[in-house]
Length: 403
Image 1 (cartoon, rainbow, N blue to C red):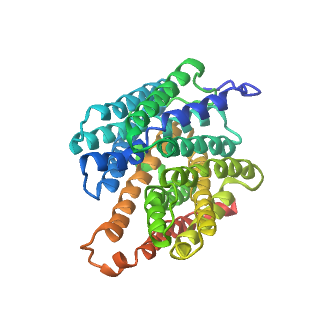
Image 2: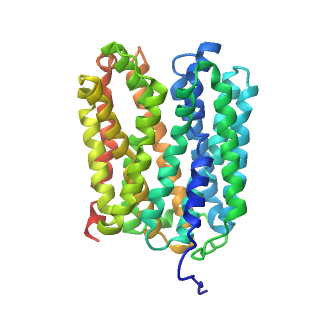
Image 3: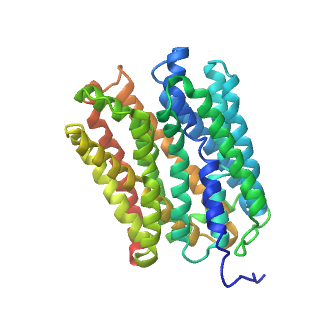
């Protein structure tokens, strides 16, 4: 079937997608941002940071895997899927207000929030791909930039207040996420490049990886994901350690917001640069830079405060700038009728990898009974472990540089 495509995409489309992606994903790290307040009030165990992060990741993985198996984003209207998912993610995020410190309930609610975010992040990329067949790297640069800003927002809300404002953080992020879903439902329709998926068939998933270029892009993304969420999850820990070592008093929440949120700018800049140099080259340079930061990270803690913060901000830029370009490569190398499923499946596997990475890091850094106690007494060195991902990703995607 021939798709009739307009000569130009309406100017409001990308801003609406970007705004909605930002809003819909702001509930992602809400639990991390309010954790210090909950620990102070309910005396949670030290391992709660990794638990609450992994609960969201597990929910997201489960959701994306189910969405991929059922080919939801290809068989149904992605606009409607996005709207409903954002509203449900907002609702389960808000229900934390009624958990009354019950760890089981909190982790379950974070899981369900992550589950419905599966209909926001990858489906948002699918909507963008349906509107922007060319310059997809630029469009996804804005979109992933919005994702980064949304995830960083809870840290900002927390940093601007005090420890007693955790309820306001939950309320504000829930309302913003719900508004993002409504905006998509009201102002967007399915894009002209949308190719409706075929009937449900589980053989669709493994067949994706038979394509050499798709496999290279996907494996590059997997290496990138080993590092990304572990870095984001442990940014507050790194800042806290630096405060102790240097006897300074950095605002951990505010600086966490800045270090994570600055990735918004690098995603957007990378999107523009990709128009000239290509998505593969931009992703390769960014992944190389973040890998170097992993290797040098133990030295960061020896630097004076201005240089330490500069290094962390640079890392925050590099660690995410490759994400939209790798997603663009995944979309461009997948079959048109399987594009939504491909994005969802690769995202699901990528987030499964983040759980392993976060657990490994938590084991070496936070567990006093670690089998390798040297890591526990030399904590900063353990961040070198994150370099495994960039190295794997760089090796995997080399063939794409020749295109």
